[in-house]
Image (cartoon, rainbow, N blue to C red; front, side):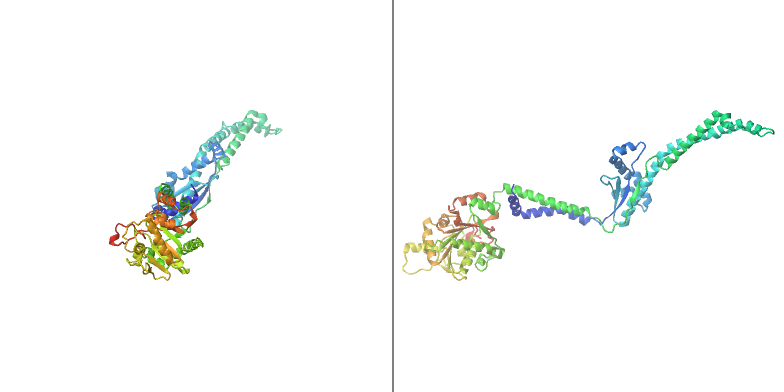
Length: 533
């Protein structure tokens, strides 16, 4: 699917795409309207993974798994209940859970505790309460986990102390008893005073005492290290306390608004593309140019003033159509054949009824007359006779009078034309011809002959090219064909039929896209006539 096709399809149904985007934005707008300002405070906790013990292996091989388990601890019911009690003021664990978001920072042993509340200080208080409770409880759990080992070590210390210090039966008591008599003899009169060492007297008891003292010191050291967390995991810490935020956070309503608008717009674009592929209408100027085999000169948009009063095109050209009219008139003038001694004939026809040929004819007449040409406008659209109607031409003049003169051959000059408010512009109306009355194709000769004798440029407003044989033959007799294509309503099949009936020399065809229009007012006797402008 080409980008130009997408752009054209969206442009064709831009209102629908915008409507889808607006509908997509509605949920976000409702969310914003019903939301209240909220503030978010963040506390940061550093998680200390175990370095020994039962959890050390898991923490070493799968650190994220251990941190994930701590997320569950932070958001546990027990933590929330204790945080609610810490905060007081009637705050419940359920309320905290609804205002709390706990996340792990990517590739880090850090947990962020985010609290949202309608007041900045309340948000900070909730985040800090959760962090404080977690750290306190983590330390308590760690102490509780160490308690059995500490108690075991203490029991060993008590047993060693009993072995050493029990009266009468303890090691110290036995060594003292063994040395008592030797010390007494050494203190007697006439004694040498020599007292043998304990290791010579009771070597077994001394060895046992020294071994027990060494064991006591080892156990005591292990107990002290465990109590100081040297032999086990360190304690998690609060890296940064939450502070009261100064401004509210972006609400979800804004995110929903942006996402909904984009999604709605995308849905609108998708529908526009599907409709463009299924539609029988031409899509854009590129498609028109390809089917007609000629380039599109430009666009002639018509405003409401021209729709209500086509005659206004003879007095002023809309600003957005001036460039197109300039290119159109220049290219039409350039096609005049200097070797042919008759007025330049331009057939202004449409690819289908209501293509806007009358408005385009009048605007072109204005542009050419301002260049100094005398212009004759021929009302060749017998179906609607719009030109004759808006200029209120005399029924005794016009095409019917021209055809009557061909039969009667009047000897006196006959005036077939009606003047307009614009100098050098006259109109050849239909005269007494009834609407939808068919004329023979050979009638085009006298009509164009009279018009060419009167003006330097003849503008033949033929209505729909395929609307009558007269218009079809007029286009073949014309020097230039200005083809009005109502872009938004142009049927592909009808455009293809028009292309088959255009001259082989496509340079004679100047295509102009117009806005389709339906006349809102008709005279009673034109109820069956197809709309013109």
